[in-house]
Image (tube, rainbow, N blue to C red; front, side, top):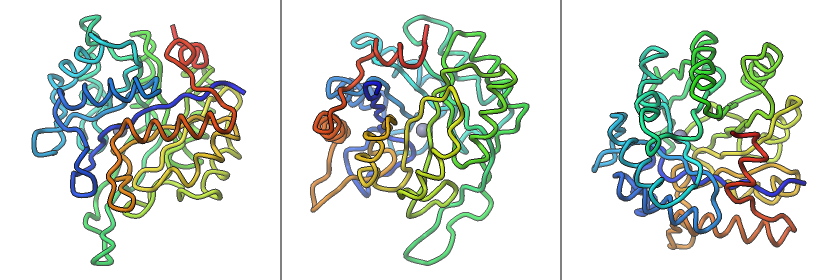
Length: 291
Ligand code: ZN
């Protein structure tokens, strides 16, 4: 079995109400990502945020953050295209990556492709109703083929996100067409508590994903808004990889707010206890067939 790849997902769109350790500004994200790399993460993923936590998809955020990480670490950098906070055309959604590619010190390693479309409205558990009712995450086939072409052009690695089996089937078709090539790094995105767009973050939800894993895919798992530690032992034993952090879930247990590096340390300890060593950056590159 391959060594395990651990990705730190440090902030997403998470607020500090659940856990005050969510990093927002570039300096905070850089510090957190470097500490996660020291703890065992070989990939770091982050979203641009303003001082008060609002989404910030100005390329300046990513240029500053990537350069800050690059100056001190070779950890693999996985920025976002902005999710629903950057709902424009394909070239507009990819524009920040194009800017990052202009200098070696700001270059990322991955660019994401969420391989399908879905309703991503936020559920409000206190009120028992949706806070939003018109939030559609659109990724047309043409848009995805455009992203794949730009990713190939730049020598980046696609980070493929599958929210449900239909996404995985699109990845499989892209592999057949040559739009993507193996090994294809595929993230099974499960969702819980306040968003129901993905499979539930349960054993059955994960099994339904892996049952359709195409030949040539290497898989990692996210539980967006749910506790991924409910599944980490299963993932480690089954040869998957783990993508986790305060961006997805508060990880505040018994009044103790874990930090991102502490979350990573916990995954590392569990993997080692179960007999799986942790992949460093070079080993991660080898597993994913990266340049
Ligand atoms: Zn993200």
